[in-house]
Image (cartoon, rainbow, N blue to C red; front, side, top):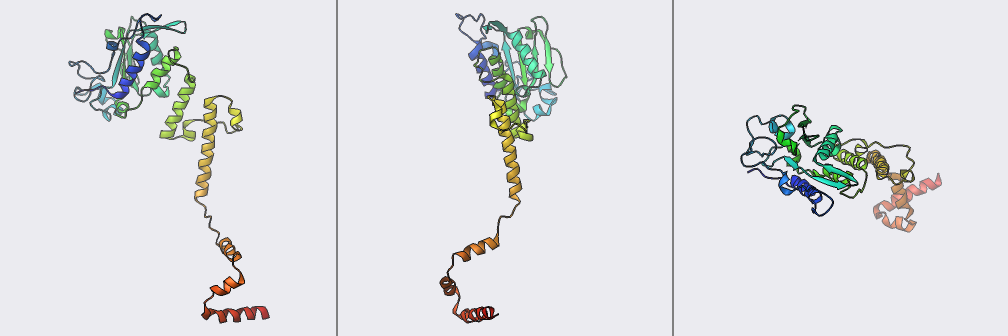
Length: 288
């Protein structure tokens, strides 16, 4: 039967941990556990809330992208988020602002949003819109006036890829998580990660060849990473050049061995049958 994958359960727990707040606080409306869903109800057939046991013929959540057809398993690949309202940083944040923020990240193609196939949402509580990475659909039914739907490409769910970074950035941006680094820095570090595993100069980052060393990296973590990646690139280039060289110097080896030998040791090492021949040869050379 269709199951809830661990990477989406982790996103669910993250949102509930920070948006399902004690009602005695200044946060006026919690996000309740029943409002964050992954698997469709038993009658649900077709779509990203269903796994392989519930998809239908020509299911759009399977056939429209090779990422989906290759990633189809019993796991659902969708997340619904219901209505909430919290006060943080002197501002009110709710399902509408959350949805608009997430769509903006997808439009900007941030590294942590690239596994999102679509978001069905209401920007204002009055109309329903659909952002579709594949640009095939623009609408949704009225239930999305009070909940926002996220579809994830199935291959990312099958791979167990962490889907929390996008949502962590949102919670950090509104002040509900400690800001360990700027959103830009986190996005750039994500780029380094992508470059490391998928290739690219400096592991996916551009660097300043005239950086002048770590003293010019100031206190910026991204600048330090830039410098580190530059040095790693240089080290790899040097190792590649050295790998084709022959470091064997036979003459130096022979000279080193001979330097440790005394005449007595040399004489003792010569077989008796060769001693006379060596003596004759040395005699001829001395007489010459």
